[in-house]
Image 1 (cartoon, rainbow, N blue to C red):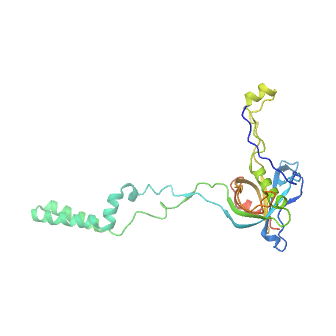
Image 2 (image 1 turned 30 degrees about the vertical axis):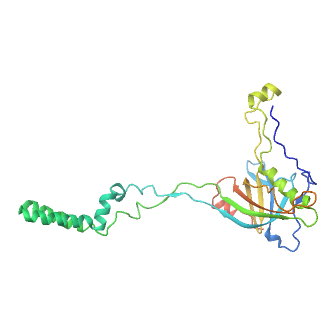
Image 3 (image 1 turned 90 degrees about the horizontal axis):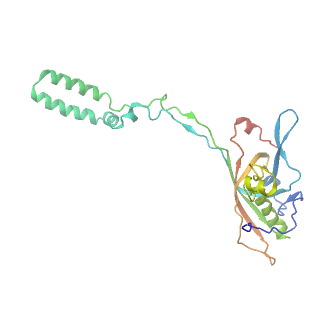
Length: 270
């Protein structure tokens, strides 16, 4: 069997400290974000809510460039059904007056032939095409948009860590904890059938997904969230033991589901 990928995480963090963070004495607490794992609990009446998992530590860091993006998918289903779209070339000729000019040339040619019925027909066609100049088939009805849904909201930010006393405790331990939350909690080494044959236990889903987390910042609490992207800095200033002295981590988080106005009203302001 191939040797699994290993990352040795050293330092004081053993998963039971209350808070992992750098020393930012003097900075307003409203500028420091808190990240923590959450779990879904029930109040016994089929109502479920997300609450912080007290068995895991909390990571705190000042953040910059924070932005929550909620993308709404609006679409106009009638935009290709109007006459202007179905007959775009003819519509352009009529709207710009090119068709009327063409009909006037045809009318001059027919007048020279002296055929009365044909002359009358071309005169009627010329007058009608002149009426289309400067007109459009677009209306408020056939251009109205319809709501087609939305993806989960995206949250981008940069979390900052620095070391004043202990680089391993103040920088690397918080970073390692964030990485543990972002990665799957456990990936089974074998498929369901192989695991059953090897251990006698059968499960269609033997692996465990990454942790669901929450975030508090200023007077807001956002949960549940998932970490979609987090880079781990490999280069930068380090102390004599090789521990990072500072790090700026650009993270991307996402709400677990799409959110509505009721969800936004439920964002706790503390």
